[in-house]
Image (cartoon, rainbow, N blue to C red; front, side, top):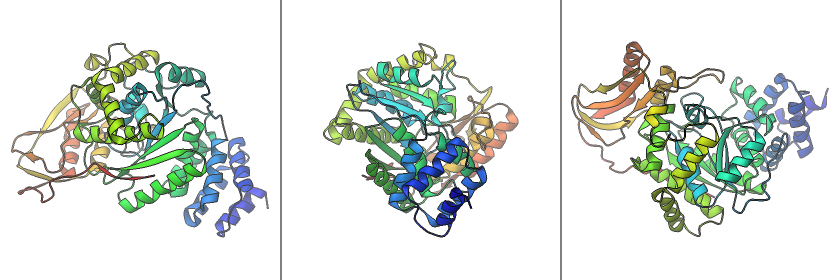
Length: 439
């Protein structure tokens, strides 16, 4: 029996793997000496047996070291990042990164694409004509140094073992394993050479984790493993049981990000989450001594236009138009059949199924169910409404942006099924978007 088979058997039988065992396994993934079948067997063994804290730290560091690790010796500020577990209409990274950069942080953000009902930051950026999400490692580091932040896609040089393991997990029903989620996220973030990380753990119908206790357990596992690996890390639990923005769909969310940065409109729930996460980033990075001081700095970066200026400069540096913030409608794609949905009854919104709205965007063509699927950046939903709002008979309710009338009609059915109305206002009048913090 080979060494790889032996260590799979050890984990299958509930025995602890050593750091050397895990380093050998990860090295085999990278060199392709370990087969997809062996990766599948290992991930399924972890699914059932779990990993203890020592194993999790060792696996995370081995996956980090499977490729390049960035270093930033010449920066005059902390290297910071955030990561979200995924949601619907989650455009936080687009506005948060330039705000943190304007406050003195450096944000080397490596983002992913959407999968399932959740959207991806990379897909939103690729709705910008000419925007290059793969500039190369040296250019990426140059952009971060010059502008304070850059957002790109995962490269084959950073944590390559994770990319191969995730592809196997995706087809073997092991994506939701907490130890594998933790090692996947942190291996990439540690490879960025960060000083501090803030996790945005989504909870609710539009998140992968609908149960708060499960979300808290994941947050604790990530923070504990990050600390064990020498990385300062906090986690913020945020509500994804209703919209945090007005739009869901790539170009539509990009337009809303432009409106947020210029001050044209800011969804209150989005604004609250951005300030909560960005404030923790500034505090962990030593750029603020309290949440109040951090929030004041972030608001100043918005009001004096520095955050918007940083974003505009980066768009140009990565190949996009210079006047995107001033003329987003001129540059971002628009769907040919956009029309508001009218309600045939009135009432108060008592429940929003965010996963269903996210899948509606996917069915319109704005998301992907498989990693290789192509997407339509123009389609989606705008004018999203929240729990507790009153909607009158015949009032415009969610604008659907589709390619054709038939696709619009199908999406309308899905939207109506995702929203529950009652004849009386709900007893609860306040739905906090920031649910708690783990550090």
